[in-house]
Length: 307
Image (cartoon, rainbow, N blue to C red):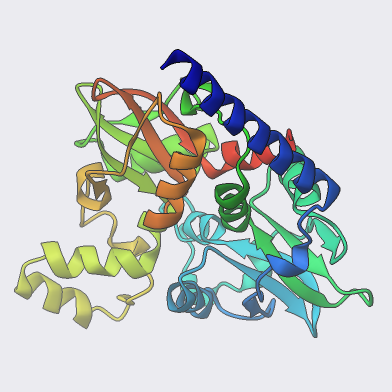
């Protein structure tokens, strides 16, 4: 029995070494992974930009002048631009005002490992793929790299070896301005909502986008109050900053309840599978049902860069 187990583990070890050798000898090119980028012009309004994000179910737009990439705008940028801390009317703002102009680009002959290293070293979530003439060829995101990792994982690593043990949390009853300040001040993209050290929800920047805020109004306001708000000339489906003094919400009002979690002793490829399957970018890590850490797509991309 012991001998057969040793043979089994030896076969697994040899297979992983062979797969790693093949990956290094024949690295995966970007042309087999990259996607067509959804684009916006610098003059596009933020309302239209939000519409594109929701229509295509994406988290970023490449900003182009003609067909040359000049910037990128993410849902995080849009959430910050429309936050209570900004105070500006979203209807007056343009993509060019909030886009990031520090673009990181690669050529089509680069590999996924090049992309992973660029994402890790520059702390970004996507890389532009440029044609030889400098025009936009496509885009590679962390999601694309996680998909590649899922198919080609040769590490056999456990979640506990890659997760962050220090987790930033909020309570279900915390006010939304507190949640938003936690995200901004800690420079994170998601925050775990915990109760008695158990993850009961998760909040990301997408939960703060105005298109979702309008749903809060419809769900929580009394019909007479809603009619009065709609009659107000300042009321706009995509601009609710002026309503913050009248409507108070808490973390539990917008959080995704019963978040997908993973045990710290599971394998890293299982975390990647859960992220891809559930279309999420981070998972609370638990041990005996208690919060033990958090693992994100960034951690998986970093593991690819370290290969």
